[in-house]
Image (tube, rainbow, N blue to C red; front, side, top):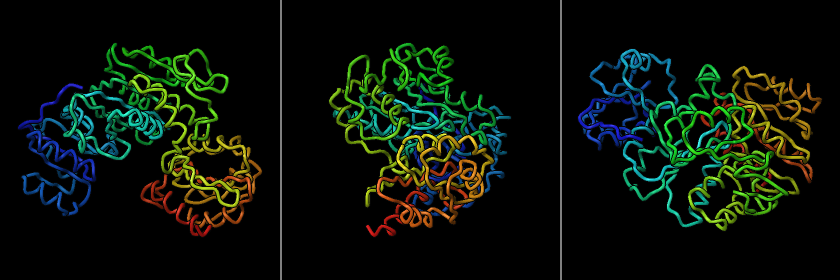
Length: 448
């Protein structure tokens, strides 16, 4: 993307945490005059004290921040909604609103690969990363996958590859991102509490390709309802993948993974489970081939890559029972995908933050479920779903209590699956915490 000039400019950073700290440090290095506003007190750690000594202004009550036309940009945390008063004031003053990624990318001139989508972003990004590394191509991964881009760009040159996982929240604050290779895994109706409408959400996702050029590439899921519209509007060269259709750049044919018509490997040799992961594999392999990765490297990764932590993660097999942690499944579609990945008798653990979703559309996905364990704020909704599907259901407080119950119920040949279909914030700070506590409780129950 185009370089943005921050030298001697007043910039307000809204939101602290890791990305706020990282972008504040980068802005200082770029010569900016930085004010940080936060909804709450700052922890006076080493970063805070160092930045304060470098004349960064800190305001702990964001509504009291003095934002006026003397500020060139507002750089906000991606999770802060645009209806917040400080953001609304910036919009009224026509001050451009950026996310941390935009500041970082304005200093980067190397090869950029960017991945977005409703589900599968992290798995696809991780696969591309490992394929590049297996091919001995240096790559730096950042973004929504856990590392702020501002923490890594200072050490990168035009010869480096930067691989980003980007959320819709991040993309909204990157004015003209131009990835050399962009990947959209799929699009469902996610985060409508933030975006308000599906059209707004889709528009945020389209930002990944809006400013691409004819010399760049856009990889799309051929089975996605938004794919024709994206393909028609982008200026990039479009490549499509599908596990159902044929004649595409990446497909499954005669149980073989094909890229550009060439058989890479048998599908049975791919370690990841589930039809959704075949789509992630197709997307990643397409991007890797564009990046010059060898078939050998792609094959080596797909034979060994067992999944990303908390994302339909295979844990272990004990007494003939396979255990999976899919705590990242924070929406119905993700859990539908997980349940459809198994045809063995399944003990399903579901429930979490109540966002008012109608769970009834999950009834067909409970085909192979033998017992439901309902937890969290939506426990009664999970019970109602189980009753609707005529499944045995028990209730416990949380995933830690669910783990030993699942162990007691499981028989050889069964699958135990945590896939909540809801966010974690009713009982946990993050989905990672939820998954970690579930795994720890399982190990305790199994005495492993």
